Image: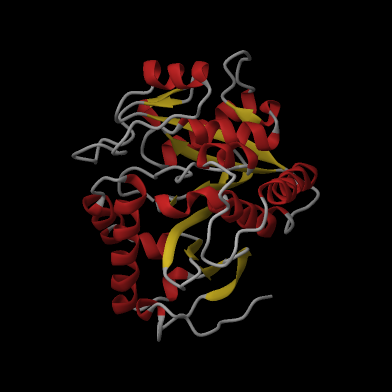
Length: 305
């Protein structure tokens, strides 16, 4: 178990509840809070500003109103785990977190807002962060499935989860009807988020999911490189809509994810400290590291949770 250690970023020093710090992947570390509710108000303010600034860089859009609303509605008291990705110089370059929930009687993780700043995306940090979260939670219950729920309007997010787990474990699927269990779980998740009436139960599209944003979610329309999938998102997922993604993860599928990441690291090469592998393009890394979010695993809209 990694232990707290001195942090180079001034905003992360002398916090009332210090994070647990450990290695994430070559050249990067993770600062993780397993009880963010223990943070004092002044410390919450510091992290609020860090998250706001990281989001602006990750999405090339102003998300300050979104984060102001989240924090005032009790973000730090509600989220189960919050983490910052630290770059080679010790400065935050990404973030993520999740909520432990039960939907339709099933154990679930709801992935909170997450992102990675553009200069650091080619190293598969989103994938590493998701693998870290899943390893902790799935191995705590290795003999049963854990459902991962997220909302996104980024086609690469949906594509990478399918690539990582296999299409039969990730819903919705364009060529198959939703299983009854998934339909119920998605309905419970949407109701918890305050979006029950906006959920289309057959497609899992959430209309107006990002209605609280005054401007664009992304500065540039996201794409995955899969022409058919990108066309579907462009046609069906409006500027303020989201796709509710439900994925089933167990110990065997977690092993598949970790094996895929190990293969990706071998094929991509080990980046030097603070450097970048010149032979791997960012769009290739999205597909080699799974599950990945191409910078974001999905934003939670609104003030809930």
